[in-house]
Image (cartoon, rainbow, N blue to C red; front, side):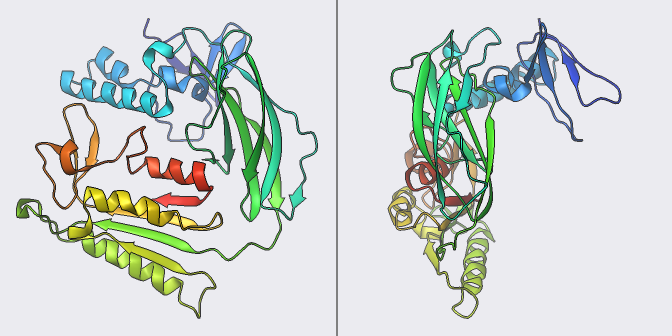
Length: 335
């Protein structure tokens, strides 16, 4: 059964029948819930299983085989990045539970980290990982903190980094079926004097390629302009922090050069911000892997010289954010 979704007039809720896939765009603030018997579940709790634009466009006849297959590949890549496969996803609406065992969470603290003890529980399926978010950022990456024995009960101690000012801290647990518990939310204010923060900028802008057929006009210029703007804002008379810039524009933007940037970023301190600016060609291979076109681009075989944008192994550019969060707890922006 494909299912249906019906809005209730003057209400932020929707009735949803059992479905095998959904896709949704909500232009106004709203709530969407699954109702199973007398239980209500947020859509997001089963997103890994049911957020399936490929099934929606296929069954409604909105796209041809090529687009449908592309959407299916995108879904499979998303599962892979999260460490799941379709075979691992469950069939029922069962959620694990999370409990914060730390009873006294300060309203305000001088420290820039918070110690929490949390416990996950699931009476049907094994537990897979704990997750922690600060202001909606997964501070241990999308892989979270693994639960080694995949038991039904797990307890762990987390040291959660805080930012200056208000911190919304959320913790949850995933089970082996790819279902996340409802998030438990805490708030605290970090009032200590923050350490001087530097900014680390990697610019990867390619206008001039080895193969002149791929020439662009403004990619490298945009990268240089971003670097100039950041440097001016961190001038000694305007800021105590320092802007560090690694220029990988044009002929420097090879796969080897981009990979080496990760070692350079390891110099950043926990309070620093790392920014990765990328501008240039992008392309996909037949498996819908998405690549950034390096200086020595080979569009016919992008996997040879180009740089993966998304890869569970950590090679992908978007995986750098996970790497920075999970290894150094740095605030990170990727453009």
